[in-house]
Image (cartoon, rainbow, N blue to C red; front, side, top):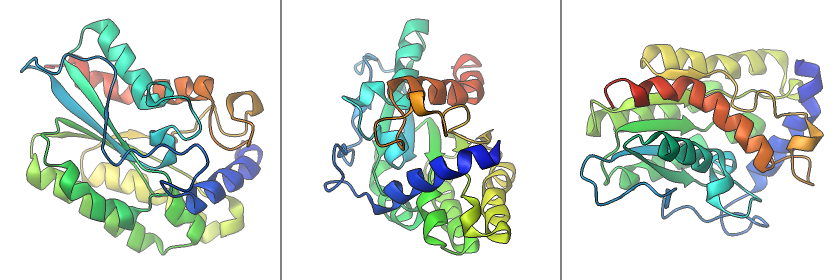
Length: 232
């Protein structure tokens, strides 16, 4: 299966690494961390879910953030009448170092659940895995320090074989290691069922379509749902 995904992952990671908010064709500037969906904001019982990531979270190439997987999750939440509001803080081209610099001001608003989706751009650039892991841990530490009761979710990613077997194994190990260390719910591979599937990716063959994002939403929902339905 990995061989099947290799070409798609190479292309996907190349565009993610080159893209930055403001110069990607069709990129969405999400630095304002706009809420998704229609959760009632004046209800004091509403809790916030912060999705923090790169172009996957931002929904690069889609018509609106509502079509990206965090927006689809908001729609599911609304349909179930659960008291949560999704905040999409995806930024195209984001690295773990950039995320570590950006996270602080996003925490000015109380966060009850934090979903971390970063690292793929580090992998393509060959950034030492220890550095990527350290940056991601710093992000997690900042969230935990500001909101000790915040529930944490981590999305895993892979790098293509062209990065070398040793590097690939070390990179893949970052995510389960962090998840275990920090007691985070873990999505092993966010693009499971989407990467390498032509009908689920946009014309560039790289970024998921609306249908692809629906599958990604299911991948995340499988580990997120217990956090929402147990003592919401």
